[in-house]
Amino acid sequence: MCRHSCSIDAMYIDVVPNRASPPAVLLRESYRDGTKIRKRTMGNLSSLSMQQVETIRAVLRNQPLASPDSLFEKVRDQHHGAVDAVRLAMGRLGFDALLDSRASRERDLVIAMVVARIVSPRSKLATERWWSTTTLPDSLDLDDTTEDDLYEAMDWLLERQQRIEKKLAARHLKDDGLVLYDLSSSYFEGVTCPLAALGHNRDGKKGKLQVNYGLLTDGRGCPVAISVFKGNTGDTTTLLPQVDKVRSTFGIKQMVIVGDRGMISQRQIDVLSELDGVAWITALKTGKIRSLVHDGSLQLGLFDTRNLFEIEHPDFPKERLVACKNHELAKLRAHKRESMLRATEAELAKVTRIIENGNLHGKDAIGVRVGRVINKYKMAKHFELVIDDASFHFSRRSETIEPEAALDGLYVVRTALTKEQSSSDNTVRSYKLLSRVERAFRSFKTVDLHVRPIYHHLENRVRAHILLAMLAYYVEWHMKQVWCELLFTDESPPVDRDPVVPAKRSEGAEEKARTKVTAYGTSAHSFSTLLADLATITKSTCRRLGANVQDATFSLFTKPSALQARAIDLLRSIIV
Image 1 (cartoon, rainbow, N blue to C red):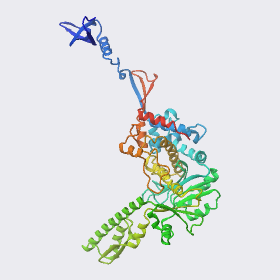
Image 2 (cartoon, one colour):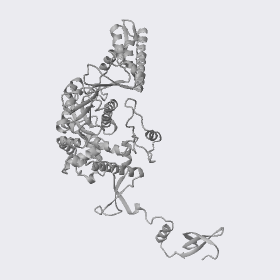
Image 3 (cartoon, rainbow, N blue to C red):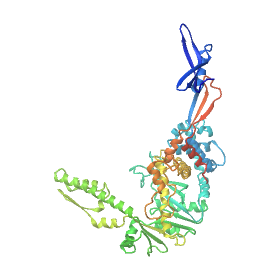
Image 4 (cartoon, rainbow, N blue to C red):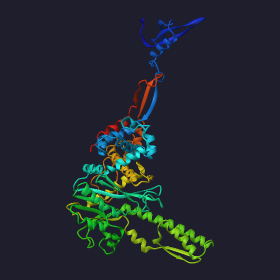
């Protein structure tokens, strides 16, 4: 014991040179004596080997006695977190049994393709290569899988489509509930598929063959069924078969079908009106609205004091017309029209200068050049054109611009529902729910699932490909619902807001968008970036260094971060 007041600081190994003899290895202790640092020898370790000395030194320094790299080796790393999250969601949804009540290799392959479509959408061959880098093979029968196996599994899936959709309808469609329906298309690479045809291309791919598909959802936008049509199929011709499917196949006798103004035409309304228990909500086309304004039935001055009111018209007996004006949308459309008009005028002025400089002659040549310009911005109807052999003049046509401007932001929702069945506000809200189907199509095409372009040539393979995309969106839709707090999604959108004014995010959503941080202090994500974050959770297969290949291995999983742990925990709250 120290005779004076002192405190012990540390013990350490001290190697002391000893002239021609080996150095002395001493175990020493440093301590503080007042303001002085002193040391004393606790033992002589000179008789120990240097390996033993270094071991003692490591212990005194609180270092590990051996580096893991010197004892173990990694045999393999596999991506785990993202696929495990999707499989967890699938488990909560009873997805495996949804496909088929019996386990089979085909069912496992379809499950794997749906997981791949959500986590890393790619071609079928690339999909098979990708999932070998994940832990999917650990839980599913994916050994020795070929591209042909995937195509056979797609054929197996298509045979079960009706049964799968009936199960989804039983879960999500209710009597007297809303059924949303809309049609979209995806372009096709190749010319041999019987479904591929030229049609109204929604992808902006002029000259590309396409395939159409119609999506049925419940009022929340949760997908229930999907139908595939030839690329030149008109929207209106697809509606009534969908209504019949809901009634006869799904057993829903009372429903309100919601479709856009290009989907539910007068011919469809005439048929729907004869069906007991089937109501509908749609909107008028621009030409019909213009007629209502022209004959005075729709007085635009009424929008000075309100943005929604009901009108009646003899052309629409036993129907309600709910006229709405979105003033913000009106400003946007007016600004866009003016921009297009000015851009067209600038291009036409260039043609005028070319003619004045003598570089363009003849009425036909000038007409071709002007036609190419005037159609660029689709503003031909708004310009008066005078073309001669050596001159060209243009001016705006106020008689077409002003009537069009008067309809900016104006739309009319049409329904046969009574006021007791649906108020004016709720009728407009119900119609605007179609945006949820449009959101599904965006997810199908670009945001998450990348259903386009379509490369399959066989008709049944195209149908199965789009069915896979719908099933993937079904899982994704439920994941997004419980992940709202982690995503940029608005967690608490107003329920009874004005149905006409543009939707605004809640203060919490605005704060999340501004700071990129959630209310819980974690980074805010999109669906895809959250999956990418989860993918950093890996499974490492390890083995003792120098061991034989057949020796037992063990696995280590990356410890989830707070964000990852929360995301996984939220998936356990999915309820069907």
